[in-house]
Amino acid sequence: MTTTDTPVHEGGTSTVTRPARWLDSTGTPSTPSARHGRRELKRLLAGLVLVLGCAAAGMWWMAGLDNRISVLALTRPVAIGQTLTAGDLRAVDISTADGVTLVPADHASTVLGRPMATNLGPGALLTPASVGVAAIPAAGQALTAIAVKAGQFPPELSPGAPVSVIVTAAGPTATSTSGGGPAPGASWPATVVSVSHSETEQTTVVSLSLDTGAATALAQVPSGQLALVLQAAGGAR
Image (cartoon, rainbow, N blue to C red; front, side, top):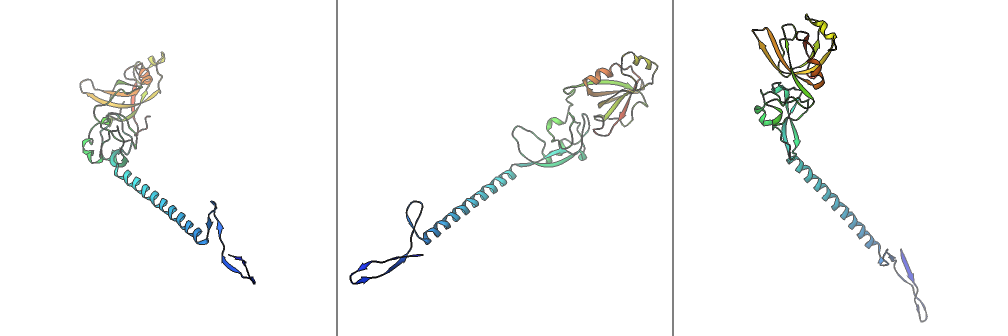
């Protein structure tokens, strides 16, 4: 765009043509080339901000990778007293957390073959306190023992096994359960803590960890009127 000035001279007029000028927001004359330069500067600044943002995100991501460690986690449920095997464990990568002590994946040999000190579900991260001497009874749990004979429990019974404790109608004093104690057919979920065989008395004493209320009810059942049913992992709960 151009503007035309028409100055007046002696003897006539003459026309002078010059480029048009605009005023910017500050009132400063602005030419097309100046506006183009400002637009290029804005694009350059926007690109610079984008590059810096991507660089910062990359540095944060790399820092997160540097803080990740490989630790042991469980592949399936395990119970108190159960001996850990290689099939129970897998390695997972996690970010380190202050105040949490976990078992590194390359230290698996330090826990394999040791009994569990607590019940844990699949995916739970293993800590040094998870294995070793059982922390029993746990909160809300009680420890009790029952004497059973052959045929009242499976011979495969072992520490850590989930079981159902069932009141049967067998035994010479079966009618005594009608006096307010649990009736035949009543059952409770429990976890085997230990199994002690007595060759002289032909009985097996099984220590169980179960709910406090269930332990109280179980104590009311006369000896010889209980049977143990082995459940699949997690099935007794």
